Amino acid sequence: MEFQCLALFFSLIVILMAAQAALPPEVYWERMLPNTPIPKVIREFPKLGPVANHHLHDHSKPSLYFSEERLRRGAKLDVQFAKRKFVTPLLPREITQRLPFSSEKVNEILEIMAVKPESKNAENMKKTLNICEEPGNNGEEKQCVTSVESMVDFVTSKLGNNVHVTSTEIESKSQKFIVKDGVKVLAEEEIIACHTMSYPYVVFYCHKILNTTAHFMPLEGEDGTRVKAVAVCHKDTSEWDPHHIAFQVLKVKPGTSPVCHVFPDGDLLWYAK
Image (cartoon, rainbow, N blue to C red):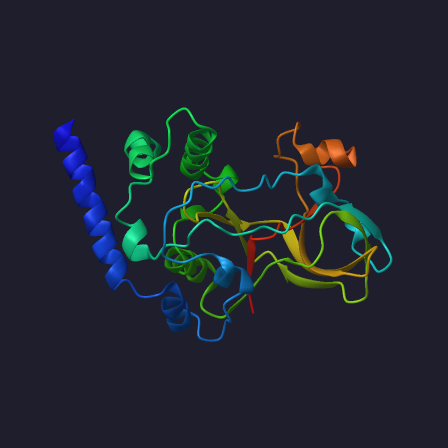
């Protein structure tokens, strides 16, 4: 046990040394994507600092789903937006590549992150690792990325360097909304979604989504506040789990009609210019 503790202490020292030498992720972004501004959400994540055992929000909220016919001016949406407070740190690749990230090493990870094995955080971390290790559905191209640099590499390998990236921007909380002028299609087919996962530091589940259209949808709340919403509509749901919450909300069956949903605060949508 003493040797194990010494090895852990040495690992942490190496990680801290890497932290001192690491370039900010923004530098890599600007080098690889000089024509793509860094989105606000990336700048909101805390940078180097204590690793926080923070439980991220559940993105499968029923209120996020709606039918395609709602993508028009004047349509009403009853959407529960949650403005997130980002406390999970965004770490440079020089650090995350030195940290184990696999279900086989989950006990080592919990020890490094000082997470109690029987805690809710530990359960969420195990779930994240399992999701990241599952094969993609029907040849889906996916990757869990543990840094901005890794996300940029995944996106550029699939879409090239001439890309847009956007996310939902929220000013208000849960309430009723009306769709305003300005709904437009952002992209079709060449789309990558990156979703934040429950982990002690920022991890994105990125996947290239097929048979999907991405939309910009400006919303106005009852109190006059605005939401610059990003929404996607999945055209083919025939392979989805029949028990998926979206089918319960929309009262439809898999493969019968498109399913649309708003991107939660913190998720990123990439598409080719």
